[in-house]
Length: 366
Image (cartoon, rainbow, N blue to C red; front, side):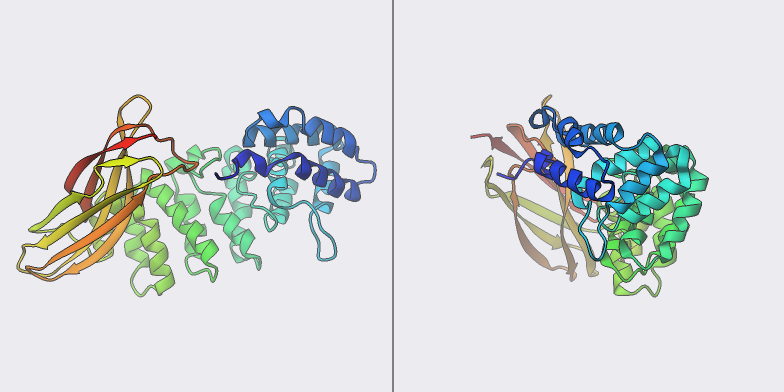
């Protein structure tokens, strides 16, 4: 079984944090910090642990924020010494965002400095929310930074709907202010950065589908394979929903005369096993067709209703009159992002965004 997420922050890590901060500030009371940060830690979940460590920092670092920020910056790794890094910097993010708003530029500089050692995408969001114009003016300058972690922070930290983080309602309503950042990073040499740009555009597509479809239309002509992959990933929500322009941007159109016969090989699935299924796709039209085949699993929720999740499957170029069979095994096992419940689930096959076939299967929790 996978290690619980909460154990990313553990007493041993707190002890390491105390040691790194003590090296940066010999007067730091590492013992008190350790005691405060680990109270009943085993009973706390990940973000609760981060919050408790944040408060421990607030109670043991100097009350003068610039002095505290200077200590934290000295405690970061350098070429010749280890320092605060990895998940230890999650509560540092929270400390900066909670206590550093009154020192706007200093705090953004600190978050920029720590992001190569653990992303600061959570920390900068409160600054964007508090003063969007001021924050974006600074963050926009990071798109040309030599460090790819800093460049990624410019796109990831400004995502309107970043998972696990506070939403940015101003950018959800009007994402125009972050488009120049995303445009500047479209052809970044690092895939790590480009995937962040794609995820931000996909966030925007959930509220402004036409805006993203138009954005892709403008930036896809002559695109490199890397940019095209980015734009395709950015369009994934629109493609799953069968958005007409999004489909057209990648050479798809509404399927004509296409039929799909769905066969479920495992009508009863025991939790931990796989749902097996196949489809026979036939192009009954007189012209060849480019088909994007996806499938949706409608999972049973705690209240007995169904909630769909769309999964990518396969792309087909099917000649006129041709037929093709494709198969799939979909694992149904424990994951951190979903709780499974027994009962009758549903699978749907989508071809170019339209439901083409469907069937039920039963899930047993044995």
